[in-house]
Length: 426
Image 1 (cartoon, one colour):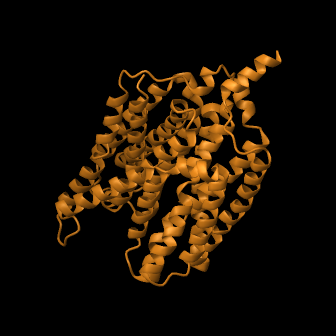
Image 2: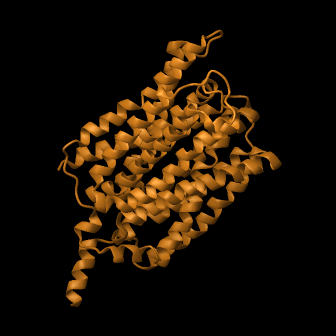
Image 3: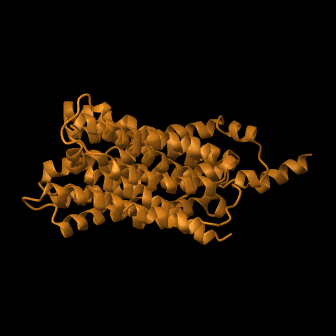
């Protein structure tokens, strides 16, 4: 077994997952035009990608111990290949089709988007328990490093799409329809490179049994962990951290453009770059503040950033507010996974899958709610309303930090110590 190679393959798999997000968003208008889809129909095409992602995390993460991590990670790669090829080869109608759901091209697109979402969820469902198993004494740090490649992949995908646009002149006037079609196809095809890359990296590699299985923890013990009060509290916090981290990103771009006149997408690229750099130092930050202390600090900064973003008037103010928000949201997702794995190792891949699935569900729920606030009260108010969540989180993580400090400090639970204590009791 080669832990470094498996960890690198996990990072590349996550890059593939996030590249799908950025490239899919970039090609959406051209793809919709080719298939004669309106905005509502385009939304229907996208929806299976998101609920497929959530379903796959929950199911795939729960089945890791039964099917094995290598099989599921390989399946995700083949799923990416099949999804991309299906979308590229889907027949394009010459005119709008009524009813649209009878068009073979629409149905194949729908299936392709679903396959993308399922593959993305399988990646997330495998790489989190894999990282925790490979590095049992450094989980929070390694999960931060791993999830640095989420914003890293967003940047890679976004810049790749931008460079292809410039190289092919897709943003010029009078571009032929055939060139626009070829442009979105080339961009989408780029996803095959990292997808096949991590498949080759894990080929014939020996994967470890998950930490829970290796320690002999039974399935019934694993499921009991999901009912523990502290886990349930963290699960509730995951709804709020994910909504805080991912919900505002969909609206920040239009808000910044509206309030300052600058291209708001630059703010998203900037915050993605911040997250990429800072997550590499997540372990050091967690050791300095403790994971709960780091989450409390993150909540304070995220709240300050969201409230400040709603009142910016200049590009300089926008970058300052985005810095507060970007630094604040950086550690939410990986540190929540790290704390779950460290405090509840008997929960294994199941609890990590529950947390990851919850994060995606939270995002799916908060987006339409924010959209309603955007329509009724404006984008700035929508950000301030979401800013209430990290205020609540500040109090919760503050109480948890005090609790662990009064109990002698935060300490990761070791399965070997649990088993040793149980043996001594017998």
